Length: 399
Image 1: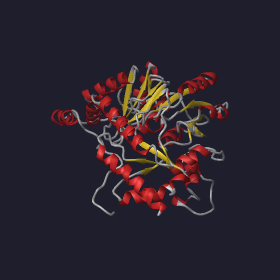
Image 2 (image 1 turned 60 degrees about the horizontal axis):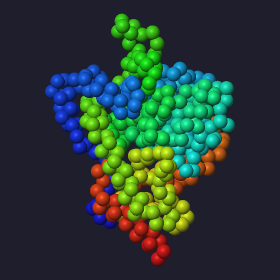
Image 3 (image 1 turned 90 degrees about the vertical axis):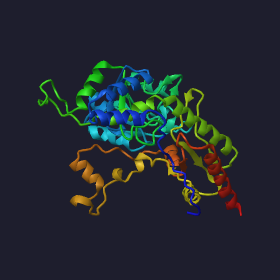
């Protein structure tokens, strides 16, 4: 690295009562999965999403799994999911024993393409998991129309879209249930943690049962398999402190994105993030695409930026390109099996997806997209430095 300056790709922004509430947990000894902050956080976040019920979990991945399990998904079922997504969306389906069915991304939103969903539906399809990518909501009306036509459940993966709007409606309120993540890099965080929100009382009750080992009134009598997916009171305390400032945290990200857009709009070869007129993009991460006009491949640009102290991340690798879904090979692998896929199928009884389709938009995003530093509290002078550095690197390619 050429200089001591370093701008991380994302840091949590802790500007409220987080420490006060955590210290209260420590002083009162309510540090585990019981305590007042859990209920306060669940109720507060559900209300923020314009939903009735919130079920807090230990992370966002398990919150998707919890919703799918509570809806009765299992072996023999198929679930529609975008090919371009973080692997947690896909893993959560695999955990149920159901089969993920991939759909290519929409070129204008980078989210799942609604027009390609119908052709992937079979008699085995039971649900759709649309993912609001990088803070921009999916086009939910056609997705819900398809779901209604085929009698399918819809579970939003809103891990990256706290407070985003679709036609003035909050993400999280547009489906049977919706999952959010509170990992450290999210717009609001609990360090780790997740939540499922829903308007369905019976579904909420079932998720509360399953997330806590399926304890019955006779506590150590279990009528079915449950999970330990509980959030701690300390996580909820951090989350509540964040929730009190969520609109401020969102606006900080939007302001940063607006400045990035202004400074990068005339840089040839840089495609700015989408923002449809029916959407409020909350810019969880400020992501851009490169094309040949930039004059340098994405990975080389990322290397040059790192030399100048600018941390970045590549976009998600398309799900159909993940090694664990590749066809069996003859070479020996771990634990005496022939390969990872063979192990997953035979030992874990996961239902492997069909990866033979074509996903050109997803592949372009995975190969050419990356995101720049996106912390809510990122100083304006750092954004200026980052964009100036990109322009300088581009100019140097001409020499």
